[in-house]
Image (cartoon, rainbow, N blue to C red; front, side, top):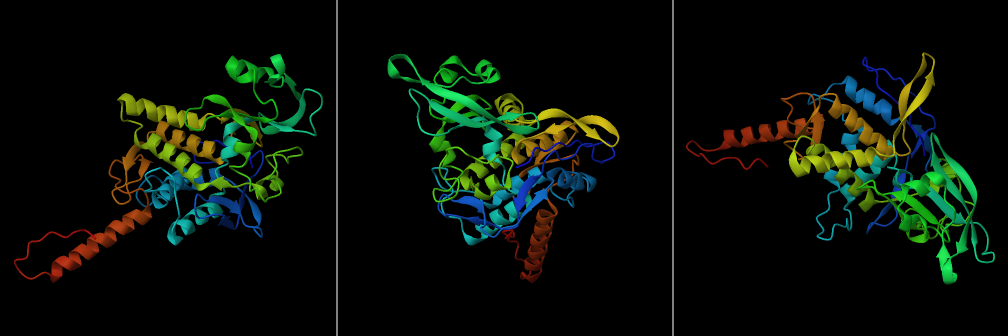
Length: 370
């Protein structure tokens, strides 16, 4: 897990640097093809990854049809490939091609860091219940790091009802009274909702089991829990495919409708701002002095900041004429989101011409384009 700090100069150079590495692995697996979860393979090798470098490389290539996709566009492209047709919105069983595309994406970028994206405070039971309370230890998100906290005790409330621990003042101020008053009596999370950005409380076990295997080393959400930035944490961590694709869908909608105006335009701005909400400006010391960068707890929020950077820099939303994916471009004549789609369109035109050349004289039927 990394906390990325980066900023783009006008000349395309890098102002910031990574305060800690974002980890990716060279091998992932889908632990269950039905409602699957992506995890690092047991023999996978971890390596640091800089998504901002990929973003800068894409910017240097420009925004034309031959460009390299920026990282956020690659996530949208993955969504187009791993698209669900199930009426209940689940992703069901992925076919071999979809599974391969998903795992290739993860090998290139890592996972989105959805747990890190949403969690503001995590409290875990530390030892058995003592008297009327449970001692909690855990982590809170702080600028540039995850800070270990301890000494929180869930105490009995009126008539024996459980009452939450004494939360840090900044969280107490941010949460509605009905949330923090009874929050986390035996452990749990304060989270920022992915879609809306609203702050709420999440139960300990139901939230934990989304990301950690029941037979894995971190199956039980009890202290000690390794730091969210550690390799030990990331080797056990996994992300449900449905949640990854939901995040990609939110990003795709936000980009597609940026200039729509009306209700859709407002919703687009709200979604993109909510995805970027965990990221904050940060002062970064470089060889050239102090400059501004971005402090981001997740890959997802970094991707949202990249999209905001492009949109605010004059790129406008377009829809690819081949795959239907929304994308941002400063070129008004661009028809395709990537060089791959441009080549696909060229291949289709060539095949259409070959079919037309083979038709008997007087046959005016139009090509079906396939």
